[in-house]
Length: 229
Ligand SMILES: CCCCCCCCCCCCCCC(=O)SCCNC(=O)CCNC(=O)[C@H](O)C(C)(C)COP(=O)(O)OP(=O)(O)OC[C@H]1O[C@@H](n2cnc3c(N)ncnc32)[C@H](O)[C@@H]1OP(=O)(O)O
Ligand SMILES: CCCCCCCC/C=C\CCCCCCCC(=O)OC[C@@H](O)COP(=O)(O)O
Image (tube, rainbow, N blue to C red; front, side):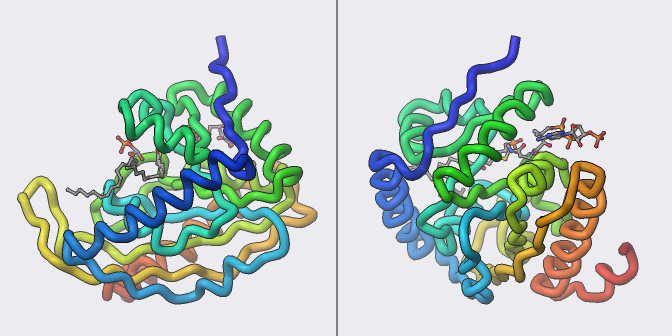
């Protein structure tokens, strides 16, 4: 049986309130961890109406990077297991996170279809990690298609956001965690008006290529992006 839809609209006062608190608190963490963020392209978030924001996902440190740029009217898609992490789960639930069951494509698709309807009526942006899991290899995993189906169903633009690789200062396997700089680039929106489900694969590939190229450039590996495109 499909999971119940667990979507708390961000426009609710509770979600807005919790989003603000979470953002303010998490934005202070960078000082304790010795991390600096260099952000470019924030103006690309200023699209009229809703949008799907897609970004690379390297580690839990991304939560700090998320809060550096997160627009006020934006909710995130997360795996449903996060809901059962005690007080953190409760806080992010109240913050408006949309929980999906990654193990059931049918259930995840149902939630996404509901979100496609709600995001336009509520005028919110939705942040998705299209790799679908954490990946700290310095490259991107192949993208899942959910975010792009969502964008096409709602006929809203996709805004890619890329964080430079953490590999030079963060590697849990080697117990490496030093101070470092994270470059963040918000890329220009990619329009989806007039696209249909037949165009989702091309849209996914286009975003993947653009984000991979940007990831390598921001991380100082420009030639590899050209080699493997
Ligand atoms: C002190 C407290 C401080 C708190 C601070 C923090 C607050 C913020 C919290 C932020 C939370 C962040 C959490 C991050 C995560 O949890 S990342 C992990 C979860 N997220 C995702 O998985 C999103 C990306 N995944 C997807 O979009 C997937 O596509 C998914 C919908 C889950 C389906 O998975 P899967 O089956 O593995 O993927 P495929 O892409 O291969 O799809 C299979 C076929 O189905 C088609 N498809 C997919 N989606 C749809 C759709 N919506 N509608 C129609 N069809 C769909 C897809 O095209 C594939 O078919 P074809 O191969 O194309 O035929
Ligand atoms: C050692 C570094 C510690 C740094 C702490 C940074 C600040 C973190 C801020 C708040 C903590 C609670 C955040 C809960 C959200 C967790 C998001 C996350 O990264 O989930 C993992 C999920 O996407 C994919 O899971 P898998 O990779 O498939 O399993």
